[in-house]
Length: 546
Image 1 (cartoon, rainbow, N blue to C red):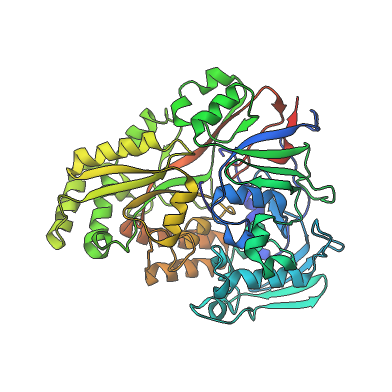
Image 2: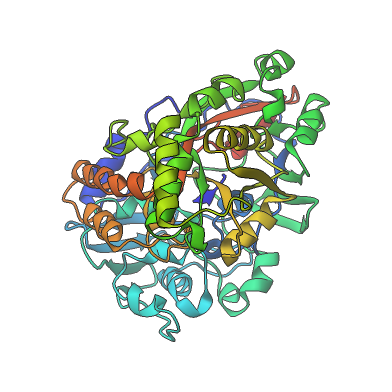
C-alpha cells in the first residue's frame, strides 16, 4: 500500500483460481482505450514528492509508488480489472500453497544492461526483508520461511532460508505455512527485482533508480519538489508497453492549482479532483471525467503510543470519536454523494467484502452512545479539558481540508472537547512524522490497495510491527486471526477468516474508517484513451495525444 493514497468486478474468479492452485497467470493485459491517438506526446500528470528515495521495498506511499510501478516490472503485474498477468514470470507453480517453483523469462535486463536472473530476485527479496536494511515494505516478505530470523530487531541475518536459487532462470520459495493468496501479492512493488548497485548503495540508487519497466527515469528526471520525468524504455516488451512519448509528473503545492492547470490545458490528467471543484468539474470538463469506485479507503489513525489513547480508556475514546462522526452527512455535503460511508476496514470492490460484520455499529453516527463512551473513558482516565485533539492532514494533495474541518466541528459539537485540524504543507512531511512515530495527535490516513485482497487492507497496516502501522497497534489475537486466514484452504474460507479478524479491529479501532474512495479525475482536451485501473490509478501507459 500504499498510503493515499470500480463498480466493475475485479477478476476475482481468476485470481481465486491462481491463489488456490499456485499457478502463474498468463496472457497479456489490454488497455481500455484504442491504440489510436498521437503516440509522440509527453503526458503531463499531477504527482507528489516521494517521501523517500525510490527503492521499491522502501516505498509505501503513492507519490513514490506510482513512479516505481512505471519504471520497474516484477514477476507479474495487474491488468485494468485487477487480474494478474505475467511480466518476468515464465511460470509460478505450486500445488500445496506453501512450496513454489518460479521460472523467469530468459534474456531479461535492466536498462543499464545488467541481466535479471533468479539470483537477482532472491538477492532483492532478502535485502527487502533484512532488519539491518530497514525497508518500509519489508513486512511483505513475512510469509517466507526465514523471514522472522532476518527481520528480528538487531538481527544480522541477511538471507531467508525459504529462498533457493536453482539455476539462472529458476528459484524456489518455501512459505512458513500454506497461504491461499500468496501468489496474488507478487505484483506489488516490494517484490520487483533491483540491480546489484541498489543493494550496495540504496540511497544513491533511490535518487537515480535503474529499472526494467515500461518507462525509465530521464536524465536529470527527478527534480525534487518540481517534477519527475519518465521516458519509454525501448527494451520493455511486456503487457504495459508505453503508447506515448513519456510521462512527466508535475509536483503541485495543492490540488486547486493543479485543477486550474488542467482547465488551462497546462496539465493533461489530474488523478483526483479537488474537493472545491466537485460540484462543477463535470460541467467544466464535460465528458473528460471519470467517476468510479476503486480499492481504497479513508481513515483517521490514532497512535496508541500517546498515553491518552492507550489502554481501555483509549479504546473507549476511539469508539466515541468514531460514533461522533456523521459520515452520511459529510459524504453528501462535502463530497456530493461521491463517497460511500465505511462499514469495515477494506473496500466493497474486493471479493469477500461484507457490510454486516459484528462491531460495525461503532462506525455509525450515534451522538448519545458517543457521549456515553467518552464518559466511560473519563471514569478510567480523565481527559484534560485543556487538551486539544488534533487531526493531521497534508494540505498539498487530496483536498482534505474541507472534510477534516467538518469532522472537527462534529466532534466539538457532540463531545464538547477541543478539536483542531493540523495541516502539513506536504504529504511527505506528514508521512515522515507518521513513520518516525512522532505524531502528537491523530492523522488522516488512506489506503490504496497493492493487490486485490482483503488481507492487504489488514496485515500491512495493523499487524504488530507492520511498516504502515501508524497507530502502533499491537494485538496478538488479531495477528493470529489474520495469519489463520492466510492459512485457510481456500480464498473463500480465507475471506471469512479475514472478516472475523475485522471484528477485533472494529472493537479496538486503531484507525477510524471513514468512507470508501472513488476515482474522480479529469483530463485535458489534448489527450485520449484515458481510463483508471482497479486501484484508482490512471493507466498512464495507455494515454495518447489527440
